[in-house]
Amino acid sequence: MSVRQAEEGEIDFHTVDRYTFAHMGVGALMGLARAPWWLAVGSAVLWEFVENPLKDAYPEAFHQRTKDTMGNSVVDAAAWVLGWGVMYRLTDRYPLLPAKGKTE
Image (cartoon, rainbow, N blue to C red; front, side):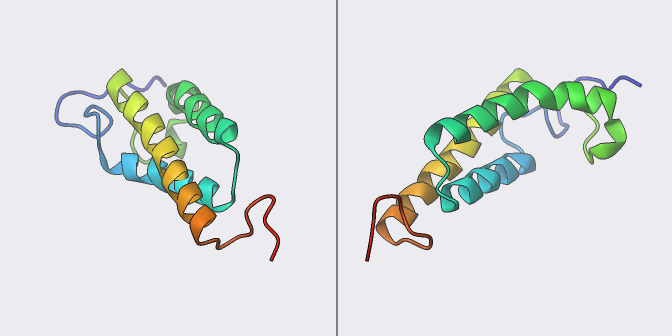
């Protein structure tokens, strides 16, 4: 069963949708865990490359059964990295977890 491309007015069509904030949350969790920048960026980009093929292969695993547009994928990856950056920076200044190289 193939999943169709999202159309005007549907989630996954617009550049920002409710799942964009979920991507930002995943990035924020990675920042909280002090993941390095390359892992956050690599994970975000890799997910966007495999998300649509996974929707084709396993549509029942996804709540939204339409493929992301290119604009949506780019913004979702950017939101992921932004979430990482904000949380990474916040935990560097006010560590919830010890930052690398810091001893107290």
